Image (cartoon, rainbow over all chains, first blue to last red; front, side, top):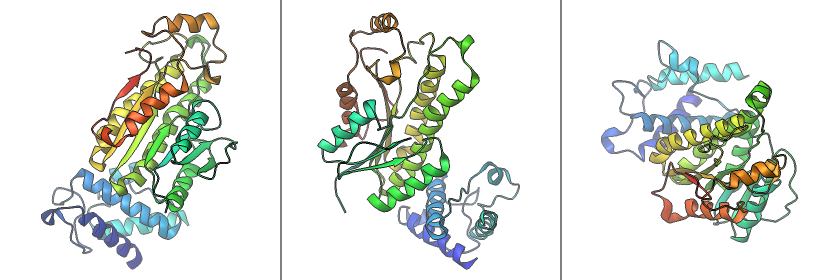
Length: 97
Length: 234
């Protein structure tokens, strides 16, 4: 779990380098990634997800697609916060095993 | 790491793709090729992988390898394509599925994976292959022409979606060129088709390479979402 959160934080670090200070994401488990109260626009969100997918692929040698139809239509979006995304990735990795 | 541009061309075993391999090797590019079977090119700056362009898992695997070997990708040329000519009343659905898998799904998949690599450097060039059969609405080419219409649509939409990442997406639409793709088309049909062009001759590989060079050059970073047909078709 901590390992996955660390991967998300690394991705946030990289994305933040390309964002203005007022648009940068906070590195905390409660940080909102996407949604009405989030700071990322749609392109920023795409960049973040691609970055996380590439890091997961490198780390676990598995192609993980985070934005499948199921995820996008869930009542509680897994992309709301770092914590919800961590749990979601953990579930996807378990399914791949 | 080799500083020369890295170009990936699909469908490089024969025809235009094979020509483009030699063409860009002569320009000192690092050329990556892909086809269902092995290539005869043994140049030290050429790396080939065998894949069905619509096989998602295999394609993803090779893009990871491209990232590791070359540290990214500068240019993608989606040349791989298949055609089938027949009256729609005589076209089995399986034929349509095969054509769409290679021409549409393959193009989509390679664009997606290439863009993932290119966005890291905030630059890239993607060139897809269209055809004059689409604007001409050629009879007997419903499957092929409509699949390439989809490629044109992908090209225009990807151009918008990938612009924020510094990636341009364009397409070249060749006229008939004497390759295997038109081998089975009767000569008189080809002649009638050439008559519909402003410049009435067969296309040549170098005509296609010239358009690619235009899309690839540094100064073309404001050119995206365009489909350039050859021979005066519009």
